Image (cartoon, rainbow, N blue to C red; front, side):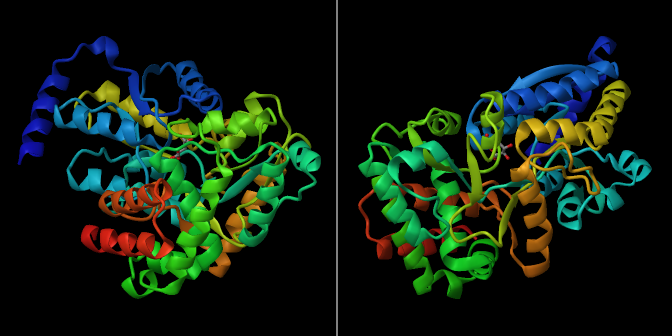
Length: 415
Ligand code: BGC
């Protein structure tokens, strides 16, 4: 009831807001690193060229937790932005609360059902109508490596977790930080997710971390996952607590560290630094995950507008997002691949080609799974439980058995 009343209050406030703001979009996002900012800048410019103004509502913080907190407080006080970067099952949660605008006419005119893979379009709809527009598909299970550091240390880039420990030790012995990492809950969860997929495989991942199947969670595999995850602590430097993800990427770029496990938004940082894939840096699937793909689709969800001008601006934004030009330029900067099907691959690098191939191949083998660390798989309550247990364990000296036990209990309580 409280929500309904505030929506009503917001609608009244919007009805009397000045017409001068009619064709402007206020857009909430958390893209503040170098690569992210370059990506969002292109959307802003594209809309400006179409006569739609841009009011930037950036809330810093990788993974978007802070942005979502700010969004909730703005929405509850009856003043949501025109559009916000909202992903996965959260789109349904906002739809259930009655906040989201139907942009189905734009989607129908442009044929989005045919332009998007089903795994993407399903998430963009609430009660069968489009309420959000996808900008990309990120692959989360990547390992980024500096080949020069590996050569200096006499190490080779690992493709299994067992080998990872061997090679990381060589990097460490040669005086490098083996694994560049930022000690923030979402980054811990991102690495944990890669370990879950690499150690347990896609079936286990799907059952335990998407479906919340208690038999899968209560298995020896979960203990093994925690063992491997715990072993990574020794390869991270003492200054990692609180470090932002892009600062960790810069350690790989400047040769201070050998590797980072991070989604392909990291590639945006390499690009801004003028580095080329294959020579200056190498991208490989995170250990043990080459046939799988943890997907993370960024999208903008649109909030109800009572002002017709603002609703039009919103539709112009939705339309621009699915255009061929936007999907290409944005994703070249962001490190992701286009959400739109049938795009020309020529402008993209080898990491993007690998990602495109893995997306298609994994969708045929069951290896395509939603990222739980990036809000694609489970409710906020369950992902919060996973974040908390993964990060608590990583920052403790608990045994793998204890970590697994705490995870199972936290997920059971949250779902
Ligand atoms: C988002 C990416 C973003 C990353 C780091 C992820 O959850 O999907 O777009 O670059 O967080 O901020």
